[in-house]
Each structure stands twice: as C-alpha cells, then as structure tokens.
Length: 288
Image (tube, rainbow, N blue to C red; front, side, top):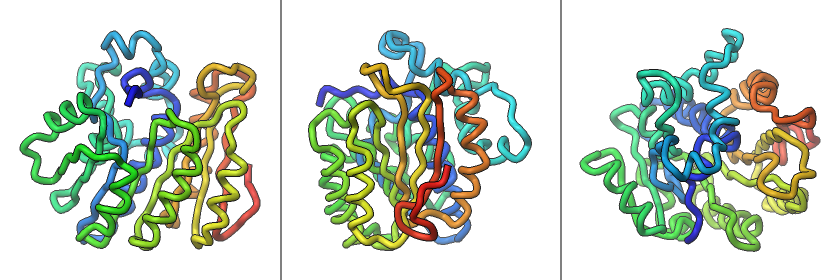
C-alpha cells in the first residue's frame, strides 16, 4: 500500500511495458469484435511529470524523456508510433509534462467497442483513477486487490481480452504470486493475452521465475527483457522484463526490430542489453 508509481512514471521500464501494450492493443483490433483490457494494478492513470514526486527521482528523464524526440528508422518509427503518438497527444506543446499510465494509454488507443476494467487498491490512487475516467462508458474502475481480479473478472463477457499483471513488487514472493495468479487466470480464460511485468535487479530470482512459468505447460509464452545498466548498483532496477502469454504472431519480429534502437537510446552504461526469446512455444532456447 506504500507504492506510488508517480515516482517511477515514464522510466525505462514503463517505456518497454507501454510499447508492448500498444502493440497488443492494436493487434486485438485486427478483428472487429470488441475486447476488454483488464489492468490489475492500474495506478492513477495519468501522471504529471512536473510534480514534486516525479521530479524527486527524475526517472522519466532516462526513459520517455530520451525517447520522445529520438530519431528512428521509418520501420522502427512505425512500430513506436501508437505509443509515442499517445504521449505527444497529451503534450501538444512539446516535451513531456503528462505521461499516460497503462489504463490511459490503452483507452487512448481504443475503438468505440473496446472496454477497460481498471483495478486499484490504494484509496487515494483509486479516487484519482475514478475521477480520470468519470463518465466514460468504456471504462470501469474498481477498488480491488488486482490479484483477486484474476479470479473475479475473468473471463470477460467479450470473450476476448488483454490482461496486464503489473504488481509493485513491494513484498517478498511476488514472482511466485505472479506464477500462481497466471495459472489461476489461465484456467478461467485460456484464450486471453496476458502481459506480466517484472523488475530486474541484482539477486532477483529471474531464472527460477522463468522455470516456474515453463512448468505451467502453457503453450506459448514470449519473454522480452531490457537492461539499461550494470547490476552492480544495488539500489533500484537495472532492467525489466515482460512475459507475454498468447502473444500476437507479429510481436516477436516487431520486438527484434525495435529493441536494439531502444536499448541504444536508453542505455545508461556499456552493459545495457536486450533479448527476446520463447519460454515456451516456437523456440525454447534464449535468443539474443
């Protein structure tokens, strides 16, 4: 209950997460039928990067601050366009003062038939999120532990959906909890696309986490990781990762296209790295 994303909004981990989310939303729109986006840990939805909290850490300066005006090849720019376009739409005068959280970003990309279910347990953040989407018939905001939503809100009535599981990792055992949460959700809604975010820092049990996911015997799980610096610094993250269950068939190729230039843009030292590989699916050995 102590975690507040405003301190980290727009950082390199948000960049990776939101680029992937934008691609998942657009892929879901290849079919006319509506889909639902379920955000288990939604935050406040829209972040003011000029606020005291965001300025205190300045993490966004090494994330969206570096990416928003970077120059990319036409192929890379096309893939990034939905994400960066949403950020620029919120900042018509240039720069980055406002940054969309996951529910706001998805909502900005919606068609009229698409729907949002946003879960937030923190009372103050829930209140702000509710105000953000007040009167929006395409959005439903619920004050609920996101882990409970995986049982109570699946499957969605649309029978199509994207589920973002993005806990704050404040407590011990969150990697294990995420595995259990996915297993429970997948039993209820095996056709959904799941996106699991996790932090990378020295000592994090990433290898064990991937092995536990592999043991779930879910047919297709793609993993993408981005590190921006060495893990020798014991304070904070050096990288982050996403596991995408039932990924779009186009996603892996898109990630291989955009990861190298994103890594170059966001690198904080020469140890920055990126990789995209199958935990289960078409290939099971890691690919750089």
